[in-house]
Image 1: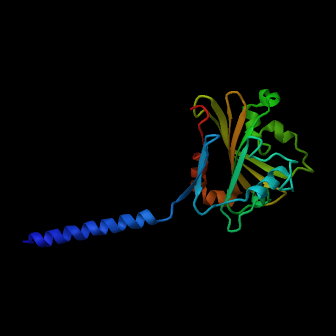
Image 2: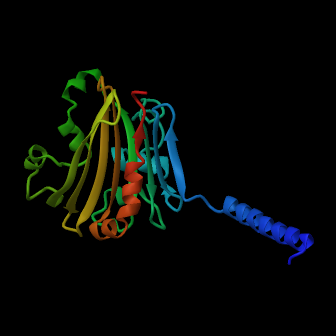
Image 3: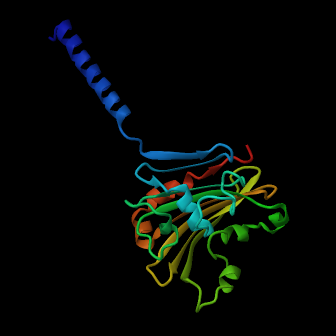
Length: 230
């Protein structure tokens, strides 16, 4: 029979082991980076290994504005908008949003104000076409000989009504850009009730990459949360 001293020693050893495990797990690197904009009440997560893209470089790619100073173009800080991107590549670059072949995932998210004169034009179809031509009408407007897009396939299209005051669409589709390898795009877009704001998240990488990392990318897409109506 074990003596009380030996039982106590054994319990202490187990407890000490649990404490060590707790400290080790507490000090481990987080699995995700949690991105938020409290002004626009918009949130999402990305794997911790993904790195944020320089704000000025992102602006240049998305607006075509090569200047980083002066007042020629309003910045997210002064026009009420917000934009951010994270890249899984070892050398993160906003060019991966527009390159013909992006072999590692990249995600872009933004909140954009809608001018009053344009608000009546916001529809679910305009949300579908927010970043790339997806609807049949938008694609029919592309000239085959000059368009950089080809081999379109719509994978999924879902209408979203996450909460009162918000509606949107989630779609996954494929394109070739400038004849390159097939790329997969995963887009979620919302508009608020008075159409004064549009919220969008766009994930992309090659179709081969998307298939290999589908669970990871779907987790990022599903994390995109807007609390406009709360």
